[in-house]
Structures are given as structure tokens and as C-alpha cells.
Length: 101
Image (cartoon, rainbow, N blue to C red):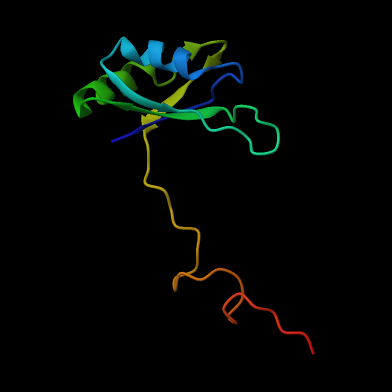
């Protein structure tokens, strides 16, 4: 399981998140996505902990809590959705090629 952490300060670091969640158990991994163009933190993260029980405890304790000047949104992360078409191809029905006449 993974935890979604939203409404984060743009000043947050992976070390900050790890320290905050370590109060509730052992943190295995922190992912803090950044914007491709600016390199700036996007305001959300994913945290993985050793056990489901630790993750549940952290979610219960931190959801809605004020941290670094913002109220965090903390819940179980949803599986990533496939953004491609149902047949696995993207783009038009010509296999990704456009025709010019």
C-alpha cells in the first residue's frame, strides 16, 4: 500500500516528509514529484511504510493536520490509471500515423 499526501507546502523536502511519518512507523520510501519544466515540487507526495497498520495509523493521525502552514490531505493512494486507449495505442486509429493527401 502507498499513502497519498496532498496540499503540501512547495518548500517540503523528502526528509521533512520522512521525519513527519516516522512518528507513526518505519518509512520505506518517499516520492515527491516535481514539475518537469520548472523543477518545483508539485504539492503532493507518496509515502510507503513497512506495514499496513503503520500506514493506517499515519493516515488517521495526519489527515487534515496543519503542517508547514497547510492542512494536509492524507489517504490511501489509488492505483495509477492507464491513460492510453483500450487497445494500448495512443493517438489516431492509424497506429499513430497521420496521412496527408
